[in-house]
Image 1: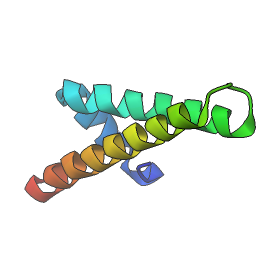
Image 2: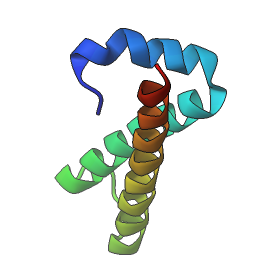
Image 3: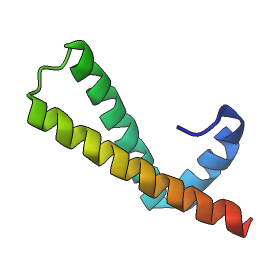
Image 4: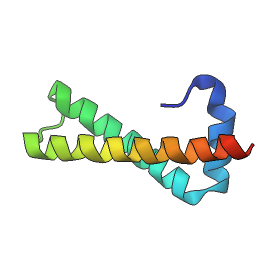
Amino acid sequence: MFEQSQKEEVEALMQANPEFRSLYYRHQELDSKVRDAEIGVLPVDDVTLHKMKKEKLQAKDKLTTMWGQLTATS
């Protein structure tokens, strides 16, 4: 999600902000599950897949907002 060059900044934010850390890991978990579902490794119905994609997008939006607030104050 974040550029490789921002790895140190992301790690610092995860250390400083438990909400960001939790959301970041949840996004990664959902990303993995969605990917597995789309290739057929994880059997889920269409409704569940849609809900996971929606939650993943909401997590990404919130992470992006939090990241923007951090970089604006830095």
